[in-house]
Image (cartoon, rainbow, N blue to C red; front, top):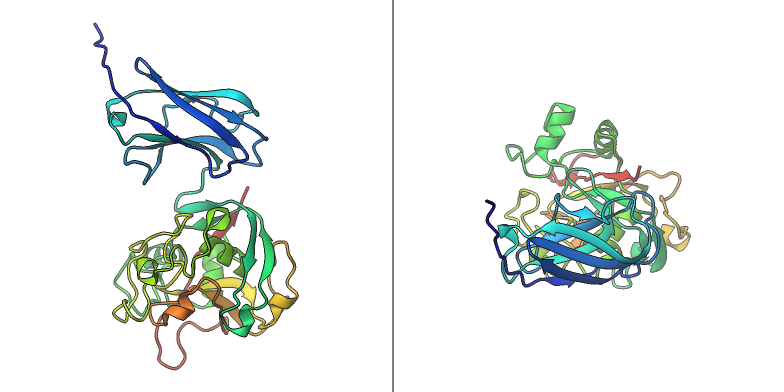
Length: 328
C-alpha cells in the first residue's frame, strides 16, 4: 500500500517581472498536490510562454519545474483563475520555498532572453561621444550569458589566438572584429548592436540605473586594472547583472556590430539603431582587465580598426566579444 506523506510547505509567491500580464498569484496545498492559480491579462507575444519558477533558497535562485501541468506553456489564453499543479515532493518541503509565474521564452543554451523595451542611452557625465542622452527602443533578442571563451572559440574556429592562453574558461581575446563576426556567423548568431549591448548591460526592462553592469560597486561585477592582476579571468566569476549576464563590465572589451561615429547619438533613430552606414572603426563596449573603472561604465564607448586584434602600443590581448541571436 502506498504510504501517504504529509509535507508542510510555507510558500510565498512572486509575480512576473511583466506585471501587466500576470497577477493575483495564489498557492495552496491539498494533500500531495500543490495548486497555483493566477490571472493573466493580455495575450502572449511571439514565442513567449507561461513558465513556473521554483526556489528552495528563499527566492535567490529559481529553477523550472518539469512536472508542472495545467495552464503553462505556449498555448495559454488570457483569463482569470488559471491553474498550475505539481506534486509536493520532499525537495520542496521547508520554510524557504517560493514560486513565481511569469511570461518568458526558453533561451538557447548559454544565452539569456532580453525582453525588448525602451531606455535612456548615453550619459551626461562621460565623454562627448556619450551625449546627448536619447531614448532608444530595442526589440527582444537573445544574448550570450558570458563572453565567448577560449574553449568555445577553439571548438568552432580550430585555434586559440589568446595572449592569455591555457585558460579554457577565460574569454578569448586577441581577436579582430572580422574574427568575432566570422565566429558569430558560424554558430548562427551575430554581434550585438551598440544599443542592444548597452540596453542589456543596464539590465534591459528590469534594470536599475547603476554605473556598471549590475552594480555601483565595480569590484562586485568587473575585472579591471585595480583587481585583475594584469590578466583576464574565467568568465562568470563576478556578480551577474539583473538579466543574468556576466562580465558586461570588465574582463575584455566586447566588439559590437556598429561602425563608430562620435556624434552619431545626435541623429540616431529611436527604434533599433544599427549605427552609421560606414566608417573606419568599429565600436567596443564594457572595459577590460587593463582599463580604469571609468571605462567599465555601461555608457562608455571605445573604437578600433576592425582588423585590430590587440593593443597596438603594448601588445596586450583585451579585445573579445559575445554574441546575440534574433528571436525565431
